[in-house]
Amino acid sequence: MNDCWNRIGVEGDQSCDRLEQVTHCHNCSVFSRSGRLLLEREVPSEYIQEWTNTIAERGSALSVRSTEEMLSLILFRLGNERFAISVRSLQEVIRPTQIHTLPHRSNHLFLGLTSIRGEILLCASLRAFLNIETAAPSDREQMLIVGTTARRWVFPVDEVYGIQRYPLHEIQDPPAVLLKTNAAYTQGILTWNDQKVNYLNAELLIDTLDRRLL
Image 1 (cartoon, rainbow, N blue to C red):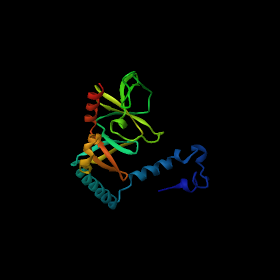
Image 2: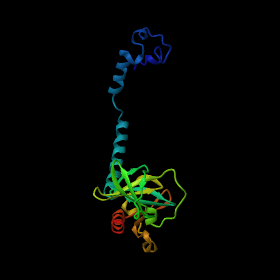
Image 3: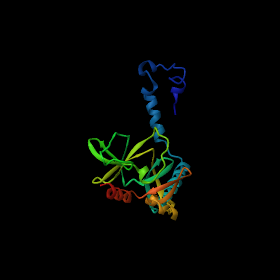
Image 4: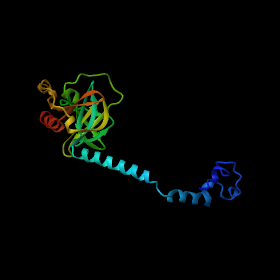
């Protein structure tokens, strides 16, 4: 390959008499021909074998993973505890919006109403519902819109960690003592960054809120 651009071109001493016409070696026909030769050169046999082995190994790994059921969960924090719900129950994550209280109705659990792009939605405190101790104010607060299109609730949370995928076998059963409290809405325990995360049953949670507050 004639790599004249490295010797007398823009990467060399710039003595090439073509530079005045083409301005840059990239515009030169010699550079273009060399590029085509690079693309059209014969592929080494060891290169083909290496990629054949790599693709075979990845395909085998994907096949194993595809046979195992995976859960997609949104992880978030309330106070000093971590929680997760299925992304199937999550409608949206939004920045905090103003909550309008209702006379004689709003309380520590039912916070009031909030407007999301012109739509009025009910807002409740998951911290109060799950008996989570109040922690210091967070500058990472977000709101989760949870439920279905027909029935949705908005829950302020202290922080959202994003979506994580877990194999079903990694979800542990909650301890029996946990089921005797409001944390009975926890249907499993998982680990994230060496911390315990309560996997909530969002459908049961929404059903209970509907019965208690509506």
